[in-house]
Amino acid sequence: MAQATSEMEVRYQAKLRQAREQFAKTTQRLFVEEITELGSSLSALPTAAPWPLAVPAECPACGHTGFASGRDKQDGDYLQVWFLPRHFGCRLCGLTLTRWELDLAGIKAQVLNDDEEPDPDCKPDFETY
Image (cartoon, rainbow, N blue to C red; front, top):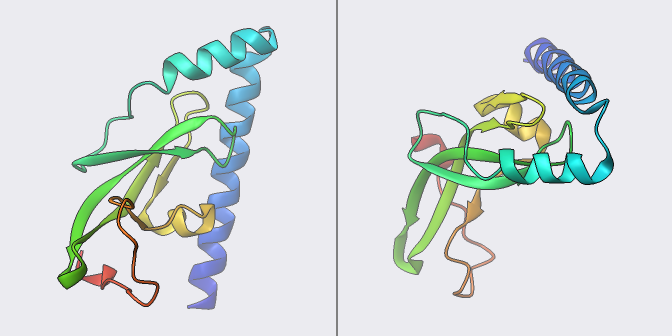
């Protein structure tokens, strides 16, 4: 298990490095304002993914907005709707992350309907999805 984790960490770090290089290459001749405008326009639409929901998330490689895609799950009596991320994509630097790499990036499950007071002891069963 430890070897699999370290291999995943190495693969994750390599993906970050490649995405940062791509970001630098893409933006090397642009002014800061142009980079901001490019980031805004490219992050307006989620990347293609086989999951029904997309939630904006900060890209761990370039810091701009990318999208985590996944599915939702309603949790029991509290009627909380959880977002369970399974994929991440950033159009600006090209980073894509799979389900297992999302934990390394800090992209975690979150409550979507946070207008209600969530139960701090509530932990949905993420393994069923």
